[in-house]
Image (cartoon, rainbow, N blue to C red):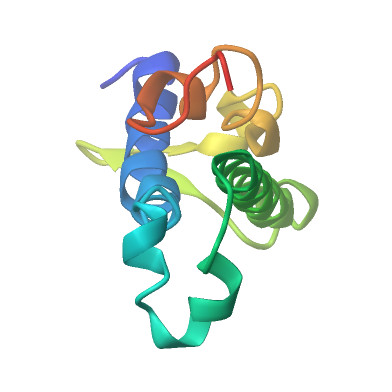
Length: 122
């Protein structure tokens, strides 16, 4: 059986790579490419580099907040479970984490460790 840290790292990496990064990559495109998207042409047309950085940060904050809120559902409603099962053994992730909802966003959390887009410097 994997250790609690290995289990949390495994789900964290999956969530960040398959959900956070998968959505965040859209805003990381070049402004010239984004302005070709018909629905957003006015938003990105004539956007300054500083504005692009700000919208990237804003998007990151929205995605972080969403992950926090989703994981809060499992922490505050015990009838819903996030479990890991291996070799017939079941582990409730809420029980092995001090605060599952904060795992993505804490210092050295999932986003800092597993995202290919977000670094500690941003």
